[in-house]
Length: 582
Image (cartoon, rainbow, N blue to C red; front, side, top):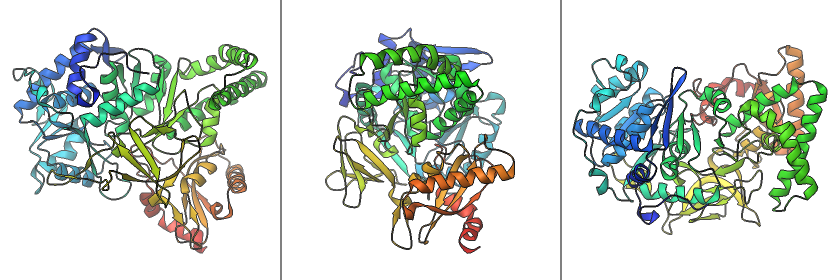
């Protein structure tokens, strides 16, 4: 849709502070930000948000933050993080969020590389990570601000900034659309994180393109639970809400998002594939516990819903008979089940970050939910291509958004060009290294193909493609997702670069049998079923079943829940070698 909201000027000339002022003027009484205090919600309106941001900006200016300065933040999804972001943007400073799971050496790299003199952190844990950097040679960091007042130690508290200086409502007017809005440091699946410089224009044009594709309720709510250090939550949890004047509910604990969805029953929900997998597993477990007659009724209703989704996918109008059957199944059977997850009001569901397992896509289609898979990188401001309710192909990642060009290089690599592609990587001296070629094309590092209808289909990351000793190219994500379609397999890592065959590390699902013999039999069946669908070079010849789920905390996943392939390979090097030598 085209936004119903007033745009203060041409979109290409807008800045985020201009949109925030528009919200205060046009939608000042509408809720903007909510967070939980005990059992209750505290809420700020858009008018109150802007007043808080302006007052807070004066406090940060009093600490020396100014135009062009990078300011680092390590906090969970709490109001101090969200409001500080807008306050720093008001000053023309550049807020940079750092993953809470970042290793000390990664934090030191970002502090050194960004040349930031100020960091805002949450509490004792974060303070103790950052304090050594204040005295570290080569790190410009000079000050810390701590959000939790009782845990600030000798440092300034967040609360002390408000009212510390007279507000200045003029600084934002000096911002230009080509100025940096943020720098997002990639999560570093390999090597040091790179600083991706993103401008106001990049973000506003991306928001406008996304807004045109999706029909959402006015001032829709958003459940904000992914880290702000990830471009997806920056767009969904900060920039799009400002663009749409929508309502953000902060969820500082990502594991609590399921409970929050049940409470709020949102109209839109975004989840990386791992989130959709976990939610599907929970619903499957609930269905398995139903009496047989009720379970059969649900399965029949799901078949009807899949037929309805398939009809929409082909661009056809469902027959009157199918439409009536779907409406009945939805009202009487499917919505009551979805209500248990808080998903009965959903009109938009989406995923990105990694290929979505097809069994998960098919499962949710059985409830009438066509998950709109999207694709993009931090360098493309998140979304570059996406499915939409008006045009989708399940399994693809959709078509390019408005203003973005797409082509496939001779080796299969996806190239992009347009106003929503970043202008370069931040250098340690503050300059920007343009990563585009002479014609403006950016090589994404992803491999894919474009079908006859213009939909993009991903294969894998170029650097992650396995090349066997026989010269065969294999997509590990394809093999891993095929393995995970079996209910006993929760996580999978496929290995075999330079080897004559592939091996796998498998993490069982929590619903898998605890009896060792039954588990062995079930996992063997999972591998056998996967191999039956894979080509000979893609088949798994040997595997090892591991204990314990992989997570960002244990080091095998990035904060955005993608596999850290190098970390897994290094951690399980002995096990992988044994799979080839035993």
